[in-house]
Image 1 (cartoon, helix red, strand yellow):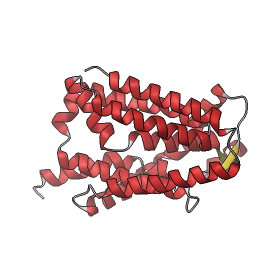
Image 2 (image 1 turned 90 degrees about the vertical axis):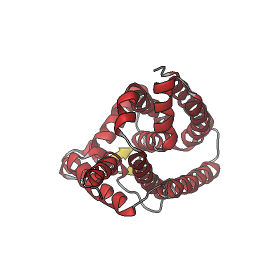
Image 3 (image 1 turned 90 degrees about the horizontal axis):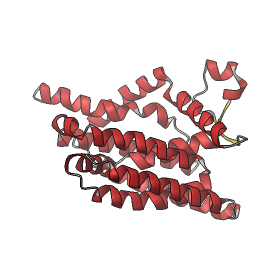
Image 4 (image 1 turned 120 degrees about the vertical axis):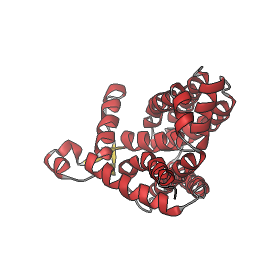
Length: 253
């Protein structure tokens, strides 16, 4: 176990996000809008590509339904918004409210400060999902943890650098905070590589990847201003997918 690949990835996100944030304020609004649309289209393409990894679309459907119900009950999107606002208060003296509340509920109605989600929170969630969903994240972290070879994560880091630069130039500094998600998520995968490699089968990883692809499709629709979906509340689906596969394997189906 080395974890060097995750460190490189975190540095790439921080650097790309910082450069994008500095560059964004110097770009005309029409250019930033075009960049956002390009990112949305690319996110849709990646999501479609990943979603085809499934061997049984009903597994993905079941994972999304069960995971979505769990996410709504846990109000994950609300907690992500609060985390984003907390991180923003720690790094900025002001908030720019531009996106609608991802989860209007009783708490949001009773607390005016929760009536809208900050731009920072939206950028944080979007970038976190883009950086952490996909086979390179799982396979690269496992490979680094088991063999010490971080070449896959090095390639991913290069891609994430340019993605962070592009996202930060349009979404703002919340993208930089996504480095924390990369550190925690990929670091945990690397540390648990030995255990996870004995538990997660190829079919499990395939359904996790396909489910993550659907979440990226949801992100793409939001980036294109077609439909803002509470993607955060669908996050449990990524965990539910391999569980469904495990149950089906146990049943011999």
